[in-house]
Length: 433
Figure 1 (cartoon, rainbow, N blue to C red):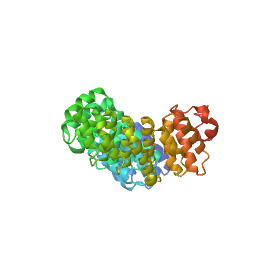
Figure 2 (figure 1 turned 120 degrees about the vertical axis):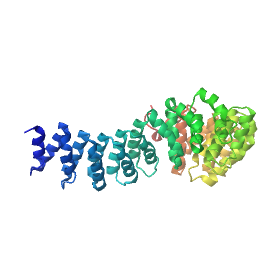
Figure 3 (figure 1 turned 45 degrees about the vertical axis):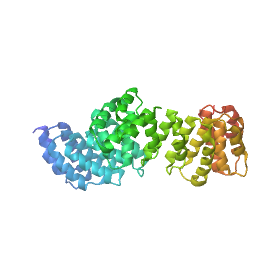
Figure 4 (figure 1 turned 135 degrees about the horizontal axis):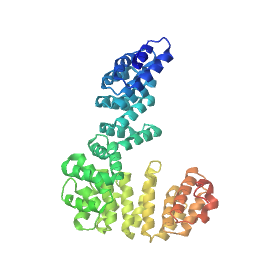
């Protein structure tokens, strides 16, 4: 009796342990005559035997097992998914990809979803790339699950994967587009030429997001390439943002861009105007301090700081008041800090800011940002006022002071020794030495 015959005979043993050992031995034996008996055991009442049969079928790598395994997947318990998806990943049959994607997107159980995602990564079918990004960008997903999915995705981003990643720009979810853009920037050495191809041959969002991504890849050859789009009605804003130079045509497009319906165009047009250092954009940047989107307001403040025009001081001061009154309890804190940083860069307003910072008739949460601007200017009294704020009666104001002091220490705008004692307990031990 051959080894195969002996093992097949053991599949009929009354001892379940013996049957289970025979399953794995058949898989290791590698004889495809065992495929049919193993497929039959996928219907066995014993979960352990069903799982063992699935693993063994994966080892045998015979395509006849694909359909039975997919059928088994539909009725399997959560604990069986690791074995079934392992087998499917070993078989690497394309017909398994879509069912695995649907389960990964649709199930509520990580015990089910993780094995499916792991199998998709092992199968390396690029159709899974965009669904994986959708999972990663879903805010409801647990952080550890998102990180697990990112690791799987990263392994798939070879040259072929990059081409699939660019296709995400045509996906309906904005978060997927932006994640793909960030990934492509990270992979700029490999992604530049495929992005150029997408700009030349694509349409709609595919072209728009491709040029946005190229614009944000730091490489001198991008500039020459983007020059050709400065007269393209659809793409001129993105090209102008990338070029960020002070010639009349680019500056005029960026000024026009601050009235564009797209938040991205308005935000990046503002930042680009700051980089051009052309004061022709001063008026529209002041107006943009009242833009309905906080990203645009912050960008406008940053740009005004780059222009270093003292005429911006009073509008920026008023913008701090407006931001704090209207948006203090929203996610707009970074706007107020952008304004304070801009005032610090402009300079020339030390006395005015000090007067406002010390005015006890102004609420502390407004005065705080005037104090931040003073510290940005290197004003010693601003440092003293922030340290004073560490004794404020409201915990969140003490927290804000400690946070901003920590930042200034890291940026070497405040000597560590000056503040070590008052706020040491707020700092990471690695910062205080």
